[in-house]
Image (tube, rainbow, N blue to C red):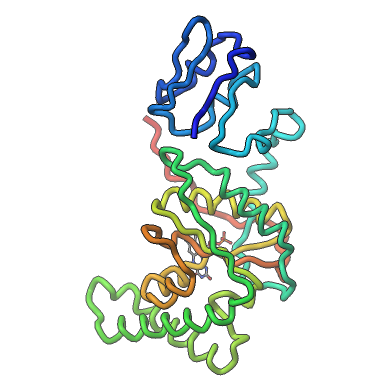
Length: 273
Ligand SMILES: Cc1cc2nc3c(=O)[nH]c(=O)nc-3n(C[C@H](O)[C@H](O)[C@H](O)COP(=O)(O)O)c2cc1C
């Protein structure tokens, strides 16, 4: 797996040398040469080269897109409004999500930056087996709640309210599985796993933007993550890879609610120095 400069195309401008954070590129006889020793395959050399002279067998080079202003820029006011208007969705239509849309959401995660360019984020999409997963999650939350209430300590006291809520949610779900306060009857969930919380969360955040751009909506289910952390059965059911853990659970579907305005927020806590 190598990054390679096409010596015929290279004009020796040194742009790649300057932009290589790992200092893995040197000039030899007026041409750039990548040593592939410290390289983390970040692709900056590919992206910066005015001659498009850098290639690799590490990735599919057909994916590389040339910049054009119309296709690649976003007005800042629109972006901020888009972020402000995003809401957690807890009312979903039953409609399935088109496969292309699910793939596009995952593409938004795949192209998100990762520490050391580890690209260690994985995605588990649950649609067909969602009812089976749901049953496991409600069971696990019930057990977790019961455990908490049986062993309340000053540290877990803050969770007492949640524990009681989970027991009620479990009971209502048992009465009628349509009473679903974890996945809200959405047609799909995407579970993001990683070795790194930061990598997984950054990917999830970009995925959420894409969800909204596609006319879909999402809810990050912290309850699911807590239930899954307690349950080997859920981890095995999902096939979470060795060394990775669940960072987020994105409940996805078409919203059955329309918001008419943004929601207010606290003033930012900023310290200028
Ligand atoms: C990490 C995380 C976990 C969350 N877990 C849940 C959850 O388990 N159930 C739920 O109904 N909402 C959950 N939420 C949604 C928050 O309650 C919601 O983001 C917040 O109230 C603000 O509303 P908004 O997203 O519409 O701006 C979660 C949000 C985040 C970021």
